[in-house]
Structure formats: structure tokens, C-alpha cells
Amino acid sequence: MANSMARSFLQVAATEEVATPLRVVQIEGLVILKIIKHCKEFSPALVTGQLLGLDVGSVLEVTNCFPFPIQEEDEEIEADGANYQLEMMRCLREVNVDNNTVGWYQSTMLGCFQTVELIETFMNYQENIRRCVCIIYDPSRSNQGALALKALKLSDSFMDLYRNNNFTGDKLREKNLSWVDIFEEIPIKVSNSALVSAFMTELEADTPVTQCDYDRLRLSSSPFLARNVEFLIECMDDLSAEQQKFQYYYRNLTRQQAQQHAWLQKRRDENKARKAAGEEPLPEEDPSNPIFKPIPEPSRLESFLVTNRIANYCNQINGVTGQSFNRLYLMKALHDN
Image (cartoon, rainbow, N blue to C red; front, side, top):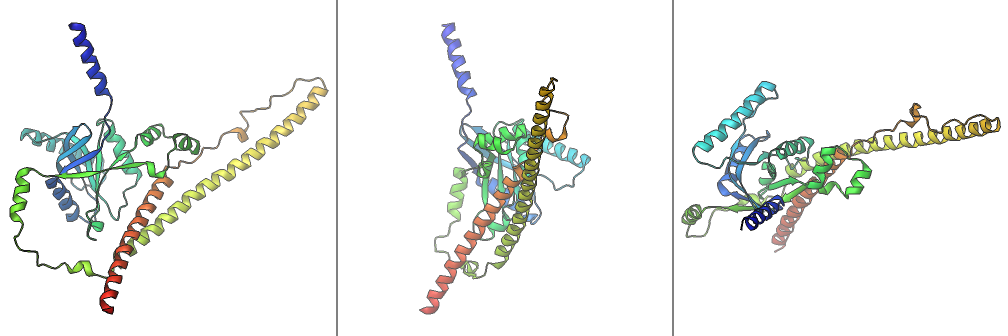
């Protein structure tokens, strides 16, 4: 009996070691309202906050959140921010509220969140939390009529490369990793309690809505479109600068290989002459020679992040222009009639 119980316990422990993949991020409606309120109050400044909840199987439940105070970069101020976070979590624990950290949220401007700082924050969270997410909210895109809210996590293959700090071309080809494999977007499911759902039902009017939303009929989307194009041009310049780094590296590598080939050919000719004279040949490799010193390959991480931002701006421009064309065709049909 004891052996069977021990075996069953070991089987349970083995099954718990297998990490269940994260499928859905379930967020309560009140948490979303808190995030939107915090981000819009301080817009266009970028803000962050803590996400609290539970990790249950393949679902990450976000049941509460609280904002971080906006502070300048200073060691003493950063220490105060950490103390503030711990004090907030202690207060929530005292009132029997979920105080388990499951990630953080942050605001962004026109979807420009693909930065090295975001990746470093993910890696710092991963040291203590097995699974965490980052909720990205974009107030500028939400003003266009769509809730710009997404949940992100780093892919496992990318985290392995980032820990080794190895973003060379050979390693990326070995892992089959491209710029689209850095972040994984997790579907978001909004959840409300039965009491909140009943209250929202009571608030619904019996008569149809008579308030007209004339903003949807605006034919001009030039401010939002112009800012996307400006940021896209900046990203193209950054990508061009990264490509110049690789061109410079490959030019130096080709020049070094030519120098190595010429040196080896000269050494072989010299060894032939020494053999003819009955002397010992010299080694064909000289580590002390600077031409045999390997040239470090530049990291491709920054170019991957810039490419992510370019794809994001192109998608936003495509969406805005598509809506604008639909409105223009609608107004043209009304004008013809």
C-alpha cells in the first residue's frame, strides 16, 4: 500500500513538472477600466503598473492591478518604488485581495513597445515568476474606435538565445528564429462577475440609443496617419543604420579572409623553401598574428526589434487607410444618390 501511494505521489509530482502552455489571459472588466483610466490620465507620458491574479492551468487570471508612481531615474527613487510595490501588496493581502504578481501593464504610443527595455523587464520577471504577461494599452489607437489592448509574452526559444546573448546569424538559423518569433500574443478574455453583469443589464435602456456618434463619419484621419508615417520613416532610418553595421562587418570579414589566404600562401611557399634546404617547416597558423583574430559579429536583436516596429506601423497604416477609403466610398455613393 505504501509503495502504491509513493508511486502515485511521484507520478503526480512528475506531471506537475510539465508546464502547461498558456492559452488565455482572463482579465476582469474592472481591471481593464483601471488600466485605461491610468494610461489616459497621464497620456502622452508612458506609465506602468502591476498585475495581480492567479495562474490556473492554461489560464492566467488577472483579478486586480495597481499603478506605479511616475518617478525619475535615480537609485534612491527606484528603491522607494520597490518599497511602494511591496507595501501595496502587503495592504492588499491584509484585506484578503489577490496579491500574486502575474505581470505588469504599460502604455505605449502608436504601438511602439518593441524595445530592449521590455525584453529585460520580461527576463527580470521570469527569474521569480514562471509565467508572466505584459498588457500593452495604446490610448492613441483606442481613440480611433478600437480597444488597443493586447497581452504579450516572450517565446521560449527567444529567451534561451537572450540568456546566452547569442544573436548571430548561424545561431538564429539553427534555432529557426525570425523577427516574428520574439513576442507571442496571448488571447484576452474579459470576465465579469454575475453581479456586475446583472448591474450592466439594469443600466441598459429599453429604448434604442438616440445619441449619434458623428466622429465615425470623419473623412480625415491625417493626424494619426501622419504620425504613423513619421515613426515609420524613423524606423526605416534605424533599420538602414543596422544594415550598414552588417555591411561593414562583412567587408571586414572578407578583407580578413583575403589577408589570411595571402599569409597562408606565403607561409606555404616559405615552408617549401625550408624543406628544400633541409630545415623544419614553420606552422601554418599563428595565433599571435592579428589577422587570425576573429571579428565579433554584431547582434541582430536590434534589427529584429526595429523590423517588429516597422510591421506594426505598416499594419496600423493599412487599417486606418482601409477605414478611410470605406468612408470615402460611402460618402461618394450618398453624394451620387
